[in-house]
Length: 529
Ligand code: HEM
Image (cartoon, rainbow, N blue to C red; front, side, top):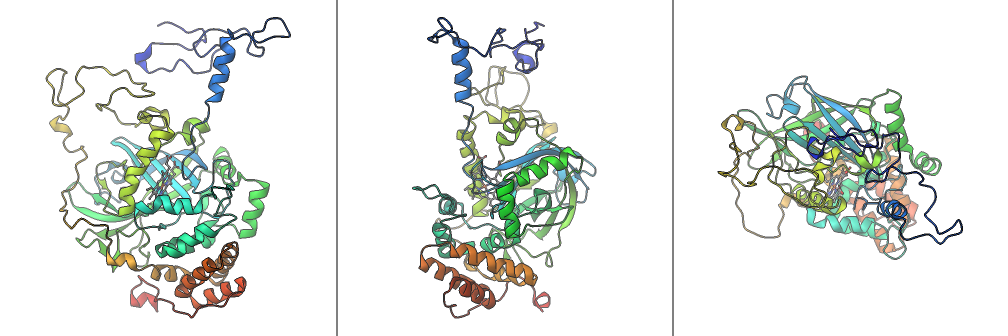
């Protein structure tokens, strides 16, 4: 094979070997021409002018000028790590997906943790939801579990996602983040769209300011459908439980950390892995019968603002995640990784949760822009660890050298059947399900309960945790300029807990509205006593 001047063996385009290893003894141009000097522009005499014919200068600066890609429209700030997921085998009866079912099977993963609203350079310890996205490179294709550290979401329908994010992002005129300073639009949104009440109270709790990525829980949020080898199904919710337990910062600690070390969480993740203190989580599932109603103990499993208390459905451990290697290159791995809720493998299906279904559209769409075209599954961090034999062609940043003449099926030109009989079991085939209903922009009546689980969450906390919540609402609502928004905030709190509402009202110097707390929901009467 020909050898490049960099010393990196170049074996031709079909081998997949990358000649741009940046590892040779000699500095070269991007086209492999050895360079004598990269510190001085080509000039007419030592005092110039610089000559247009200095192609190396132009090429070097052109590349630098285009180093940035768009940051993620949400979850722009993040940190990632590689690891291994080991299945316990306890999910063997629930799903045929080997990644979960096969006892002892080790699957490589890449995990990215993130904040939601801040830009790439924002501080780690702000009050926000945290992303917890896991790419499982399974031998049966890639599975992404794109979750958060809070088990519920702000909205019940993806059609509102642009709106809730716009309400929380910086003001268009002064670019000041709503969630940290001028708060009116965020609080306006969550008090008008009261389905956001449950997620918001989790944000106002200590869960909104984690101590470390290593001490966060993770949740798939939506209900998923598992399918076993006999084509039997169940509904599940995924939970990540950190081995170190759940820990948060106090508000004062978070403020100090943001000032002293805006990279507090990123540094903590990197350093712990570097020092061999590998972060660990256990993956568990809450399992529910797959009934036509898709409810459990009266809780609508398609409503992403509702969780199922663990007292009603214990989390059953099914595997272990260990993060044991830092990225070699932040851009190549953490920045270019592309998660997608539609990346599922046989044995794992989505449900009709309208939030999940909108996400299935959104991620692919945004990545088309963010990663510059349709071929981003070829970027090393996104490459499946299973053989790929798709029928795509061409497009920006195409790296594959496709062979064969007939990218369609069936065909009588190329060899082989694309669907050999022995692969029938491995194929992704949806479980048949009946679909019916009248077309309309409607939602189930159960989606109208916006308060009972927020009240349940508050009631479940210790008094110091409740105090932190009262302090957080007082601080955050206190940042609003509009009195009517503060008053609406208090009206929401009046439904959650009378004392909480009274404390926040006193802190804001406003009268407390008449108490009208709802019954904390979703616990059986026995557990409620
Ligand atoms: C990014 C979680 C709802 C659109 C992310 C990321 C996470 C996440 C963890 C960061 C992925 C990464 O690290 O690269 C969630 C959860 C949701 C939710 C748990 C609700 C349960 C939505 C909805 C939409 C949406 C409803 C849109 C309809 C996006 C977009 C990105 C993103 C566009 C950026 C993706 C990229 O540029 O690669 N989400 N999200 N998300 N999410 Fe969501």
